[in-house]
Each structure stands twice: as structure tokens, then as C-alpha cells.
Amino acid sequence: MPAFELSKDYATAAFRLYSAIGEPPVHITEEEVRKAINNGESSAYSLDIYAAARTIKTLVDSDREDISAAVKAIYFTTSDTTARKDLISITKQYAQRNGLTVQKVFRQLKEARKLFCTFRGITFESRRL
Image 1 (cartoon, rainbow, N blue to C red):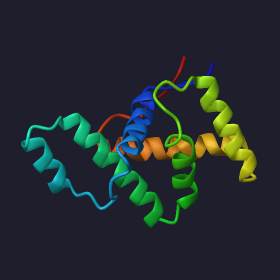
Image 2 (spheres, helix red, strand yellow; image 1 turned 60 degrees about the vertical axis):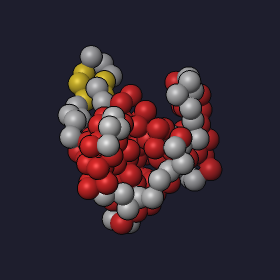
Image 3 (tube, rainbow, N blue to C red; image 1 turned 180 degrees about the vertical axis):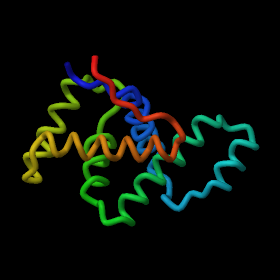
Image 4 (cartoon, one colour; image 1 turned 45 degrees about the horizontal axis):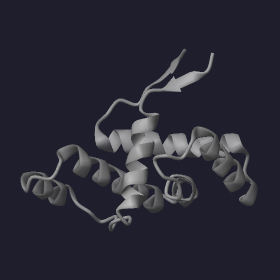
């Protein structure tokens, strides 16, 4: 049976949200997030943006620009209404253009989602159906 990643949709939506607001500077701080929450902004929204920004920054700082590039190429160019089959098609095209296997790209995206979940403080879990 295939594995089911419980946090996949949430993390994917957060990356899309992060790109939709114009990819704010990745140097956003926890203090800025707390200030936004105290000023009445949605705490979930602010924490999602912070976690997405921190994920991208961490990937770049740790020489994992390959994963950052995959996230940007796939999640940042798709909207919330993008169908699953379109996302798979975009992933296949990205893999082909970069000389990667589709499985490698999916593993990269999973690694980014897992890091996002760590920063967001949510459980990343894969289960067999």
C-alpha cells in the first residue's frame, strides 16, 4: 500500500501562500512573527509564512539549493486550484529539465515539507494505508 503523508497538503499550501504574497525576505524573524500576531494578524498565517521562509533559508544556507530550487519551481508556480495531475506533470517536466528522476524530485519536495513541519511545529508523519 502507498504511504500517506498527513501533512503534505498543509505544507504545500503554506509554500504556495508564501509565494503568493511575493516571497517576503527570508530574514523574517520570530520577533516579527510575534509582533504580527500581537497586532491582530492570524497566528496560523504568520507562523506558516515564517516556517516557509525559514525552510527556504535553511535549505539555501545548508547548500541544499537543489531542494530549494525544486520547491520554487513546483510549488511557487502553481496555484491552489492546480489539480494533482497538473502538479505531477510540472514535477515530471522539472525533473526532465534538470536531469533528475521524478522520484528524486518527489524525495526533495518531501524533505522540504518535513523541514517546514519541523519549523511550524506540526507532526510530519507518513502512514501506510
